[in-house]
Image (cartoon, rainbow, N blue to C red; front, side):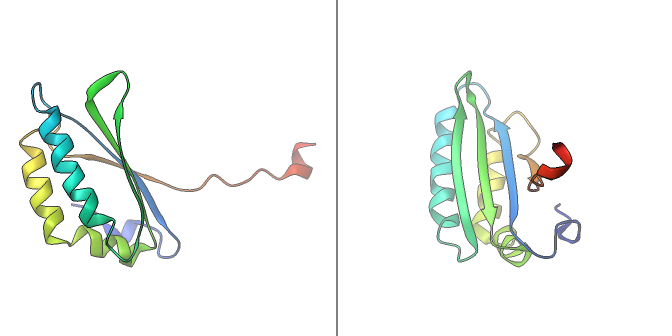
Length: 115
């Protein structure tokens, strides 16, 4: 379960989700993910939902996601189609669930301090 209170109260929520399809399940995972992408991209607070496969492992998937703010991400997490997707995905992947990594912007260096 995601602890929404640990996420920034303001500003965008950015994350990557990673998971690995079980042998023989990669195409089914790709199809399932494409269907989810259609739904998520219609969410008013979704700014990006980009799905990738690793070049070195066709069973490994990465999803790059950005939501307008914590409220938009909470709406995404609460969507019924997301729960349906996750239940189906969990049967097709090696991990117990998709692995989420939340990201924050890298602060620009103070140019004067560097010189």
